[in-house]
Image (cartoon, rainbow, N blue to C red; front, top):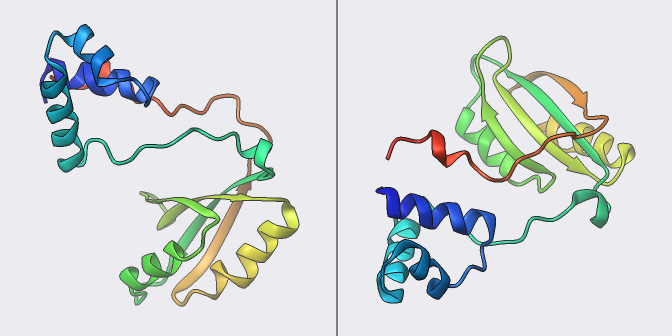
Length: 153
């Protein structure tokens, strides 16, 4: 990636509907060259998708929780990861350091919905020894725009 690619993705992550024409006028390339760079960035996996940022509360997903998961020594991690991928309420899964194996970000309608996800879906996955839940009271900061200025060009 060069400075032009960095500029293109910076513009697109702020406003995904920015036209190739507008980007071309900013970066000083032809529209077709910008289009080719965007296609290349998609093929390389830098741009992973296109979508709108949705306010979870406005669509009825009021409860945000983080669940730490401890897997047993003999747990098949591939199987665990395959099973959690089937649970639509799990938005993120992070392999972490420390006492716990994974950290899951879960969004639910309400606390009863979360209890169902935890007790009737997550805890039934073989290999889970223990979980620890943290419920977010509020989210004063949640960024969707990556700090690309920190990346090497």
